[in-house]
Image 1 (cartoon, helix red, strand yellow):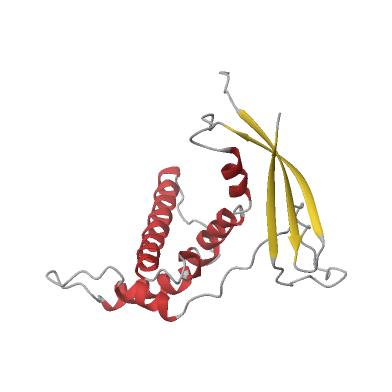
Image 2 (tube, rainbow, N blue to C red):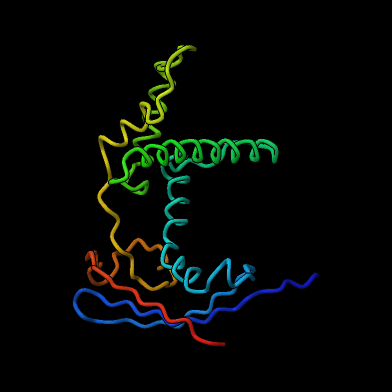
Length: 193
């Protein structure tokens, strides 16, 4: 196997909750982004806090677009085709929502619902809406207008540490689940290696 050059960034992150409690964590980020000027350590570590976004994207693909169904193709080529279709649909809808967010700077793209966009796109296909060839192109369009009419609430700041997911059980978990929306202040200190 070939060797890969990596950069190791050690950081101490403190998260102060609105109740006054502070949680500290030591994080070691290993990356192939080697240029320290182009990719400053503090910016890379800041991105760690946005780790929930990729998990949200997977959820949107699996639950919203697939609706909990499994891929139906019986051949490797068919599976590849289905995966590409899912990714193209997801990217087209997210692009429409990002364009919509540009038109309304007061609403971020994470507040525009993929479910609303998907249902609106399905309605347009079913009704063959907006298919006139010489129609004026509206950057917001039906999908964006529907998403703007039903914005999601602002995302809460996530401050939960990574944990191993609890095994699925038919028995109810002991204790209440904490669903409090905490206000957090995050401080990042890059440690010299």
